[in-house]
Image (cartoon, rainbow, N blue to C red):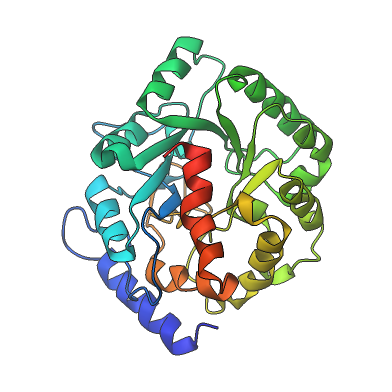
Length: 316
């Protein structure tokens, strides 16, 4: 259990870095040293790059505008966390433009993979090009775009699956437990692997008995779906609420669990105007990574989560 003092010190350190005067130091950096042996080849399976808007313009239909978060900052983060590999996911603020993710992936070379966003204007040739650059799947930003109707979600999912089946890609779903539960049959019959973002949108304070969580666990247990045990939004005073969720998912199928930071921790629900820049959350990723041994005390299990599962899914 993380103490109040550890939380406070970590949050203060991250906040100080987040408000540093340097031109590329707004995204948070770890304030707490990693306190366990991170295995070689470990992967952060959920990050974003927010490039200079002059070079990588925001999507006109975005629902928020984040601060920049650059490859140099990401490299510093992972050096501090002792993490070698990274998966960069195109955030909703770019629509179906994956250029900023490519920029970040190229900065990391062979240690980077990507998850793209596509739309009905994305050609098969473009998907092939993205595959050649290291992309391994597509993300459906359902929650961020306000899609809570299971019928709409099902339609988008089936269309996406049809686009990428046969390519060895997966579909990553940013959605809620309610939507997952409502379309469980379609997900179970998916022709491609599925990855759920951020505990499937579970609310940690509601525990393992919250509606829909058991449906997601069933999909993970069956081997049909992966789930990212990645913490969203800002810093918490009590991260202990995540332990039962993580432990149940790990027990269901350790071979389908992925870990990620969600760096640079965008605040997509600040209530600000979509075009108004929203500060990034000052999250201490060292403190959060140190939670993993409390969720998975066995080093062999942690190696599966941090190294083996990402290597298989993303082709490292």
